[in-house]
Image 1 (cartoon, helix red, strand yellow):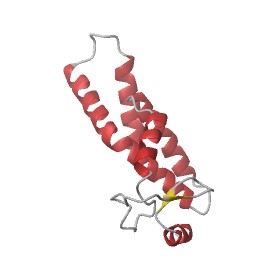
Image 2 (image 1 turned 90 degrees about the vertical axis):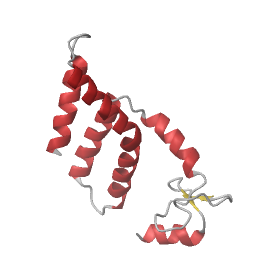
Image 3 (image 1 turned 180 degrees about the vertical axis):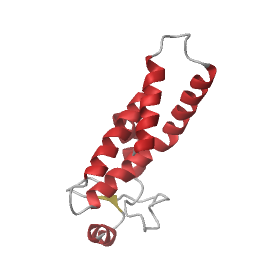
Length: 133
């Protein structure tokens, strides 16, 4: 978590600078972080949240890292609400269970939605297997 905090603080410091005082290297590195965040921030946060839900006990490291990761994404212009909406549209056609063949490719059929957590499954069997995991 230490490296993540360093990047977060570094990006925050650059963004606080007055326009025209940011070096070319700083601008390029910040631009690269933003490009990387566009592709990787939301899937990483989603995976972190899934892992957190699967833990038997509350894990403070998950909580701390999740808070830091959310803040880092917000700093780089990522929007949780927008990503959730986009994810919901995409997820509506895919089974939530990672091991299912329809997790990566849409089923082409109406999926079942869990009344408890709202995620989608292609079958009751997939939901049952996921609940055991």
